[in-house]
Length: 237
Image 1 (spheres, rainbow, N blue to C red):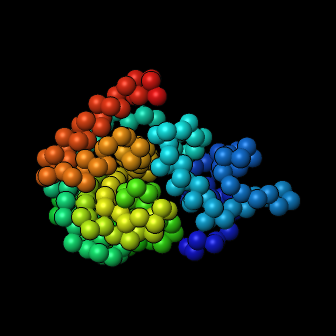
Image 2 (cartoon, one colour; image 1 turned 60 degrees about the vertical axis):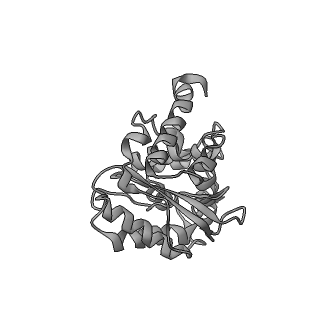
């Protein structure tokens, strides 16, 4: 699907995995970008993707009315999902697609997927729609349609590139940190995205990941991040 594609309400509902009536209501009150022609709504894929990307990455600091907010709070901490085998602090690749394939290989070697090539193709398809780089040296690559056929269990992959990779970031900076959610369904996927999207907005956390000495320190940093956010989860955010 090309990024300049124009979609109907039904097509957009299928794209964002929401009820058609929900999408229509969100468009009517300005929570999704669209154009009303006569009595029909039409949506540019590029505008919708940009809106959802910004909403996801900023959801930790703003009370945004997006599909992410529909998702209930996830009680499973990221530190309990991640394993040493799903952390790589020395990515070798220097190009975007090579990084995506390397991430798919990490998922395979850590037992999260049996389908390295299929995962790579889905990651690449998502990046071709809109870069998942969110600025400040961070990207959150992910497949658009996670399923049990792709991933064996929920998890996240954290990878670091010391030299950085050009990833078409909005601030034009190279990406050094990659957080990849591995979900078996759309709801879990959104929950993981919601949690991961808070990381770049938490003071000093990104720099700590960049300077982590080993994989176990990465998990300790995640624990620290979650302690900070416990207060928010209990109603202080």
